[in-house]
Image (tube, rainbow, N blue to C red; front, top):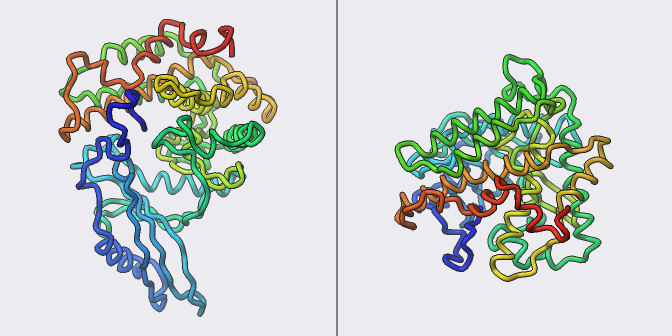
Length: 393
């Protein structure tokens, strides 16, 4: 996640990231090797090598990349793996809790019941004994990811690609959502996301989601300052909830192209399922559209051309209609809701920066919302006309 005020602190990889959240590679190697011996067959003789702890670590889950060899069915083989570890509470995490086993179960269900490309998930460990927090292990795949640092709209392999290749990637990314949303009986496939084992309507799931986001905001502010703009946003959302939101589907939650690994402009792996939920299809569509707009606005602020022909709201809706037969509805609502949810997360990230002495608390708490002007314009119903030629998408 990237601050809106480009130019003030270009080292985004270090933004609000405490050093404590990093681990020593050799200690991690030893811990992983000992742990593997407990989950593999007695004569597997696991050996862990090539441990890498990415610099961009600690903002959400911690990630450890490693290779391991072990004997299975009489054959010695090497496996390229990733461990995703819940952050320490002392690292002032972004979210109040991290259910890594739920992420593991959702990924396994998506791999089983859909054609969405998911890395193979190996094990889920619910105790913190081995690595200092609950974690799961999945396979490590290769590919290209649109960068957050600097944002892909600032100049990247994606922005420099041909119009045809960008269009291909856009269509394929929307297809990921179409294929995910086609999962039958998601409340049964992912029972930990459902309430009392029932399949809620989209409207009921949306109301529950909004209520949870309110609780999250209240946790974020704790005994600190409140945000009048975020609270105005919640008031608007709660007053304008769609009454007919269709069925509740499995939503990826963090449905942005920065969470997809691509090969030849086609998705090779869909990652980061910590925000998975049941809800209307438009939850994912609104998030995907807004997340690109967030980076597009950053590019405009920096005087860069950006990617104005990419992931446009109407183009995404048309692609989804073509793929599914469903015309996305109420996208003004869902893109504003995405901007509001993102505002709460940004507010938390800025609070972390203050906690670690990397920023000062502003006199106006709304200045902690790194896309404040965008959210204000959406609430004033002026945003889309201001960013779209001719005032339409």
